[in-house]
Structure formats: C-alpha cells, structure tokens
Image 1 (cartoon, rainbow, N blue to C red):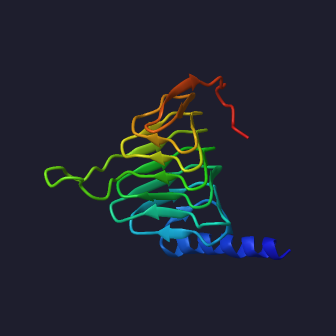
Image 2: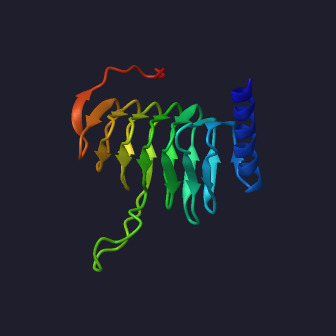
Length: 182
C-alpha cells in the first residue's frame, strides 16, 4: 500500500510540475525517485511511464530545445533524455536503464570545430537497451533494437538489430506492421 501511495505522489508531482511550467502532457506515471525535469524549451508528452528506483530519470528540454514523446513510452531508471535542439520519441518506445540520448555534443572538441547540434528521432516501437548512447543526428527506425551498451553514431533502418561500439548491423528483425513490443 505504501509503494502504491508513493507512486501516486510521484505521478502527481511529475504531472503538476509539467502543468505549472506550461507544458501540455498526457498522463506521466512515475515510480521510484522523483524524475529530474528540465525546463526552458518546448515539451510535448503523450503517455509516459518513468521508473527511477535506483537512479532518477532526467527528461526535458533546455531553452531552444524541443522534446516530443509519443504514447505508451517507457523510460527506465537513470536514463537521460534532454533536448538542446530536437528529440522525438514515437509511440510504444522502450528506453532501458542508463540510456543517454543526445542531440548535442555540449562542447566543441577542437577550437576549429563548432558545437554539434542535430535532431534525434526514435521511431515507433523501437527498443533502446541498457546503457546505450544515441548521438546527435541519429534516427532509430521503427521496431528496431539497439543492444545494451551500444554507441549509435549513424541512423538505424527500420526493423534492424544493431550492437557494439560503434553500433553495427547485426540482422534484420521479423516484425509485422502494427506489432507492439510487449
């Protein structure tokens, strides 16, 4: 009963925080630690589940950033999804523990190089495994799977399994249109 009440309080907190910051969202359910909500940019959320039992989820958009999250999206503990330009996450996406999705590299790596800002798109039904990193400019195709610990530097076609550092093609997945990953 206590866990249920804690979930209700954290869910109410996340939804109230979004509302008081002027964001329109669907239902956000939150379990575990309070999520770290980042504001300043544009945020649009459908129906989102957050699990932060070990580490809180960091989610939001800084000034000039845009975060769009579809319906029935689940983000697991310790994940970081904060937009500096544009991050879109489609319906029925699952994001594993400690995943990082970046649309910015935050700092130039050399004086002659500019800061990299490029949109990231996670298409419907994708599954991003534990501790994977999605870098700026990447699109993860519909129903694709990014294996745990992968670093995705290039776009992933629909219905594809990628793995490794950097992530590479492993195989095409046998998925049907309209299939929703359990």
